[in-house]
Length: 308
Image (cartoon, rainbow, N blue to C red; front, top):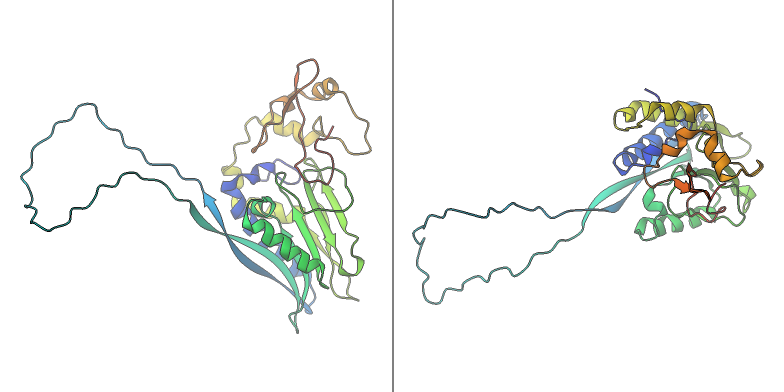
């Protein structure tokens, strides 16, 4: 069953699904590139391991109010000079860290194994300043931008801190950026709205070879089907999803569209008043007190904090 969203499905951001999705996207992009690359190049996966803290809860046992005890004979007498173990006064918990694999798709020149293009699919830990993977990614990003390697960054996550850009771009929940080695510091940016299809991105190679195409929409759709994510995601009201496919959600607007009043956006489609993000509530109230659907962009510094 395909995803009801034409582009990136925001429900895939669920932590229970994202890790599997991230690995599947990287593997599918490698396969798609190797089908169109000339024998001069090869695409491969480069894994790296970080650790994610897992939330744990103390296991509690129910203790009865009344109990029946049977005296037991002593197992043995304590001989003089034997040390008696002190009872444990208190117990606590420690953080549990599980390994998390992150993948980079790399295009190498076949003969020399020279790194030509690196494709990074950002994960939540890459956008969380408190996590060590955030600083690790920024260091790796700086190294790539200082080299002769082309860099493609694919950010399909609405939350977290995005890598900085010097000039603001139109606000959107998802972005793809391409930094060509010969054009730096200029970068090409694809802002992707929630209702839009994922773009076909050029993958640059060594001169004079032309770019090859990477269809992100086809890649994500194949991973969605192969992972059977429709069985894991509860989309709720099917009427909302059909309405979502037919028109743009009220509250979202491009930079070039006239701004609507809150009540006008709410009147566009009542279905969206019930929509909730898997990570945060997108409910907002207008000046008249009516609730309407108005998503907010993530704290990226790439645009305004809210859209519409």
